[in-house]
Image (cartoon, rainbow over all chains, first blue to last red; front, side, top):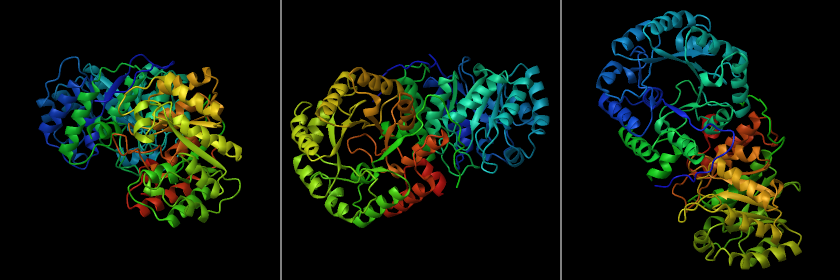
Length: 308
Length: 308
């Protein structure tokens, strides 16, 4: 299999942690409902390919996300090595109860950076979403869990257009104050360009939230995801969200194009000599297999190029 | 229509020249043969959208590229403003004769950076290709034409794998010595990553070929085109090749994925406040229309997102 030539570049990290979101953010946004055994096999193969952090599922109410209604059953079927981080998304205390019952050690909560998305996705407001997060986070911390905070719509929103940087930083900083160990800054509709990425990361720094606490999460709706990721790496970010095979998308976005594909990210990082621990060949093979399960071609350009 | 938020970033040029290759590199590699009137309309609309440099066609023998067999007829139908640069590709002296007869003022020649591609595409060798270029370039210069030199397979080759940087620089520098005013460094199979891009541009500089003489030409086969383009801009390059709607591909590559889409490039440049003169809305409308002519969806993510 073809591999990228390795030529390093200055000003980039030695090592990047890939936070794999395919099983959760990917499958949540695919129209097909995937069998629980296939999901378990998918996660097993992702870990076997070297991914050390895999968001496995979500304990959101099945009425809202039927694709992940089997969360408890899936976790029951998984038998991952102890070193693998396997966070799950929880929307509220009821979700936390289910996650705790399943023995989860790490959770993620999902906040909005805009009023309209808070209203549409969380049936809440920018302020009131914290009324939901506060008891969830407090109880999770008391139970010894690590908590990631997603901030969605960081760079634009389908209804409001541009989003003020200060508003995003305010939501993110409040999540950190609550007790989140990491923020994932989401370009939920894929519109960001590099100047915005630099500006947001620097603004978080000025607010006391350093790059060690930031992850980036880009969607490729406008073809910008990998260039924005590279920009974030130059700013010192070392955790990048991506989705194996480019699975998923955002139901609120203008297009079905989904997350940055893990393979396209790994191609770049491998070429730059940045360590990820991922075996690209095994990953491509996994996404090729998953595309067959879903009955549609992978959105990853690397998978398309190498699997053909 | 949604537009990117504008946030500038340091270390990037104020203005970029987009060298539009859709009508030539794009249509040459599409399986459909497009009617000459549609091509003329396509070029007219690209210019109307603000593109100032459009490679219109190729005077290669119709046996090799039947898609562009109508080159003379097309040029006859075009009536472009005098300020628009409308280069054509010429493979040899016979092609030059036809270009001169059509009143062309600017040509491009196409060199290989690898032995195997020189053999397969030009039926020549790395050295012998210059036997073909030398009389072509000398006569073109004597006729007052500007000449661009394409260097293909700069970052990898389907048969030889990695390509030594020195070999690429040697081919490029020789084209400049011959009289080319500009080099277009082609990632013909789309495998490059940013370290390679920096290394090649710096090596050209050490050989006396500055960034003012360099254009970059990335294919998106592995999803790397826009991140590599951003990297080249940071190195000081200000001319970028792209193809409206992402038309085209390389018949020698592992995948059909083609050139960097002009719309995806313009989205990034607009977001960064870098001037191009292009009206994104008109460009998207043109590529949407062209996709209908070709009977298949545009490969540009911006076109997909905005036209939907």
